[in-house]
Structures are given as structure tokens and as C-alpha cells.
Image 1: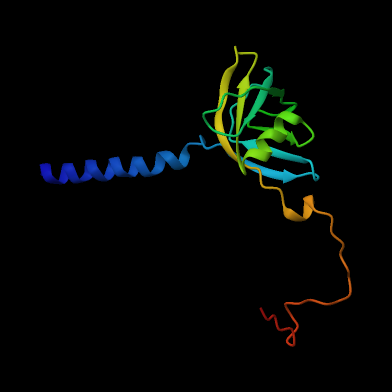
Image 2 (image 1 turned 180 degrees about the horizontal axis):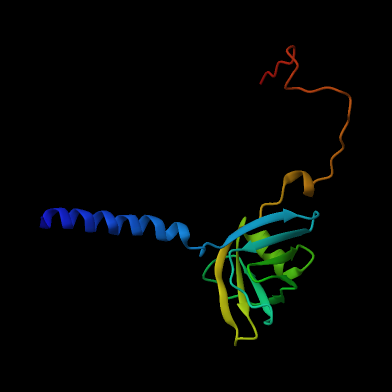
Length: 153
């Protein structure tokens, strides 16, 4: 009889360990939207923000680096915030030049600069066609469909 109780207890404990992480909404997710050649917007969701407080975001090249410049978050709700990174800002450009992966930090300035989001990884890679000058010639040719195209080294 005690062996059956131990098995039931282990099954119950494993069930709780599997269900609780799926119920919790503690995961912070970041999605990127490229606005132009020099502007990217990042939507941070999975937050627990107070709409009566003010927030700032910081941007750094490494997780351990101290954020030097803080910028106001103007678009936010109770569960998400949107921040804008611009290459025209010299401080942000330094981070873009240094790495392809940056770290975004959010803090509540109303609550004594309390960190709301620890440094979270964001993608800083700029699509190649946005940073180069190119000309599209619309002549109906598609090299992937041509059978007579032969590339020789």
C-alpha cells in the first residue's frame, strides 16, 4: 500500500511540474519590425506594467555592460511596450556597429529606477538590401527557373 502512495505522489508532483510552467505567463518575448533603413521598432510583450508609471529603456552591446543612455518609452500598455532604435542616434549606432546581438533593458523611473526587464537579447542585424543602393531590373528573368543557365567557376 505505501508503494502505491509513493507512485501516486511522484506522478502528482511530476504533473504539477509539467503544468505550472505552461500556465505561467512569465516569458518576455521581443519581436522586431524594421521601419526604415535607420529605424527598428521592438515590441516587448509578456510584461506586467502599471499605466500610471513612466518607463525608460536602455540598450547595450553586452549583457554585463552598464547602460549609459536611457530613453523614454512612449508606447506601452499593461502587458507590452514598444521601443524604437535609431541608427541616427550616435550612442545607439555604436552598439549597432559593435555587434549583431544587443541587449534591451526596461526600468520603471516612477518606482525608483526599478528594473522591470533584465537585459534581453534582441536581433540587430540589418537586412542587406536595406543598407545598399541597388537597382531592380524587371525584365522577367529569374535565374532559378532557367534551365540553360550554367555557372562555371
